[in-house]
Length: 119
Image (cartoon, rainbow, N blue to C red; front, side, top):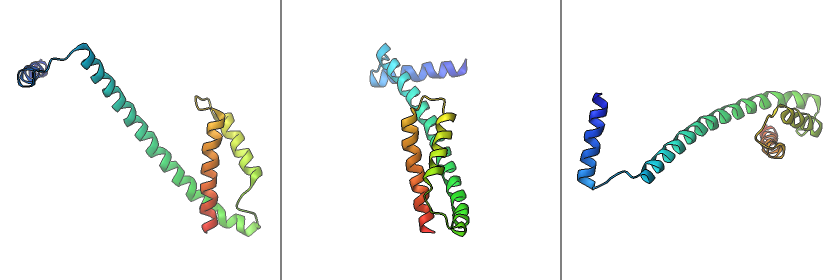
């Protein structure tokens, strides 16, 4: 109840000071902007997790690299990459199309190959 009274007082002050009256359009815009900010915040959190997982993947690749060198294996293994892409497509329930998923993972695997080549 105290919060409602404070909000009412604040609204009254704003209207008196700025001559601002919230219309249905401005309320709808404010709601949309609030929703947009919420979803962007959620996406930011997902992006942080993706970066964390990419770095973990890179750490594993760096541990794998000397083993491949000991076996005389090439950095790039097209057969293994095809298996990885197949598993990922099978695991994906969408809405990301398989072609997009493949493009993303081709870029990831390329970055991991570059990382191995530096070692």
